[in-house]
Image 1 (cartoon, rainbow, N blue to C red):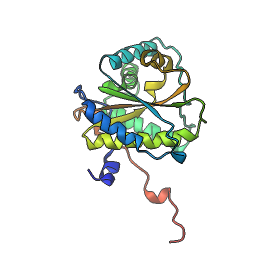
Image 2 (image 1 turned 90 degrees about the vertical axis):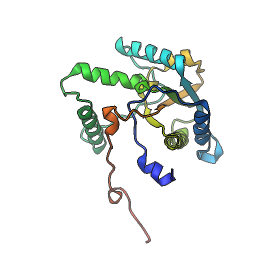
Image 3 (image 1 turned 30 degrees about the horizontal axis):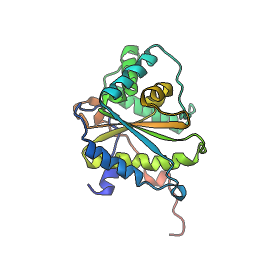
Image 4 (image 1 turned 45 degrees about the vertical axis):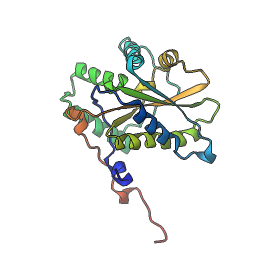
Length: 223
């Protein structure tokens, strides 16, 4: 797959087949992640790739905390958007499209709760990848580098016919992750990526989120 085709084709997948992903393919994807650029080649990332019984154990433990309404304990600040901003409008617009595809009425609290839980279950993907960095590093610097690695993972996965969904729900209960995955306290858990073969019969996977046209966010100077 050509790189520009992959960039334009990549999208969030929220429904996966149960098929396992071969270890050799995952190795190639993670090797691509390690080729990402970083400030002065500092490479401030670490990755944990989880599947099988351990991932299922994580799912159960996280959903248990969610259903008990226990407070989240995430390492990294969760992004929020102020009411009335264009960013909040885009977020709401995306949610409306997903709920429409999934036949989730506005007032159906049960269906909405079930959809929320899917995110905390890594959308039932057969693989979850966690991106970490050192707590001793600044809050800002490593995020740029981890973002580049994250994009490499998503594009490399697409080349193998796999889908991905970048999601913070999977890291909101960090104590669960630390206990089950044996993550030391000096590491900061940044984000999770659900990965697997897309289930194209899953309604939400039909979604194609829009992008602002180039002329609305780009200035050309000196041309």
